[in-house]
Length: 230
Image 1 (cartoon, rainbow, N blue to C red):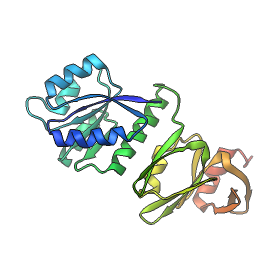
Image 2: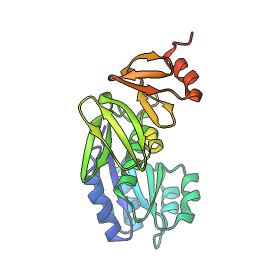
Image 3: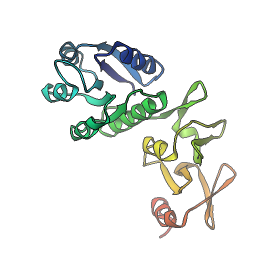
């Protein structure tokens, strides 16, 4: 699933940052950008992008007013240097809200979230991969290859049968980007792929030869998901 997108921001350096990020994200296709809000609104109506990266504080027409003026607005990710605008942005049901300066990790989280939610709404087939930045490399990791994820300080260990990835993010953030139908949190430090479970042994699940603990408060929910508690 590739989402078409457009950028509207009155600051050219901010546009260049987003363009650079978008070109590194294989699930995005950039249709263009505008530094003038009115011209950008016209382009959005003509091009009909699925996702709009939109600055809030702009001359002539704010991002908030722009969205309200569009008859059929696309999904919106607001970008701004002013956190006080966040509440109003979310009241417009924005997909996400990025505070400048925008890190690539935070950008990826917003993109993965948009990809997952729009797929769930029927925009296309459900997402089949996760984008992970580890070091200077950006990895496209198929969901079917992921065994489990483990919290690791300020990082997360993402285990697959072939490779271990250690992106700098939190387990909560990655959990939000994974489909609930196939991934489940079984411990405050572990999220697993349900399809990869070999068997349960006491308070552990066995995946890929590893015994992973099941937290007491998560056990009942896991059994219900697996329908093994009946």
